Image 1 (cartoon, one colour):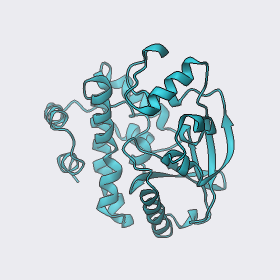
Image 2 (image 1 turned 90 degrees about the vertical axis):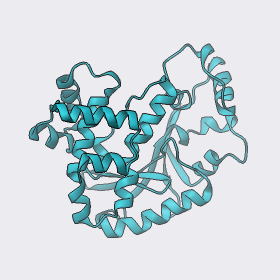
Image 3 (image 1 turned 180 degrees about the vertical axis):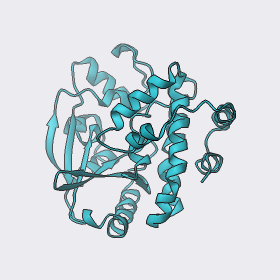
Length: 270
């Protein structure tokens, strides 16, 4: 797959695509075989991301870094074909880039990519979007784990979650048979029981939480703030109140509350 085909497949925003095409014509890539191999290795991709950004130097919005990563994504496509993973899953997984560009535009007023450090998971064929949710396949020693991730555009409607779980149930034996008995884990601010007072009884977040058995809670964690209030960091009193959750969360934070972060295991087997 060429980068041009990938840009079209994931509906990359036209202004970004045009910039990328210009950079490609100028031959500005800094990617090397060694850097690419490290970017695709879980144990090395954090240092590889640091090295990539250092080589690029000034890179507003990390757009040049995103082009480098998408070029790797295009080169990785034959592995998806060889594994038999459908083009639809490749498209939905790599559209992570498009989603973050649009999220950046909404939060900062310009296209930017704030998740380049995370993208190697998709590039290395270790994280896949299946319907509404994403699933990351992780080997920790002898243990196999599948981590749930909730994209910013995900629907947590029960039928959407059920659909993603059905897709996962079909996906694992076909492509990751060693993970058939893996732990199924959600490690997220959305799991925190401290959110319950901020949400209505019929909240989809609470219904989603109820699918998991809690096994860890960090009561002091403030990570939820960046997810509920995306955009530039501002004092608590200046946080936006565009949604009901933002309004309640802001009042909660101003009163000294902390949203916390938690992890749980899926209660029912796939």
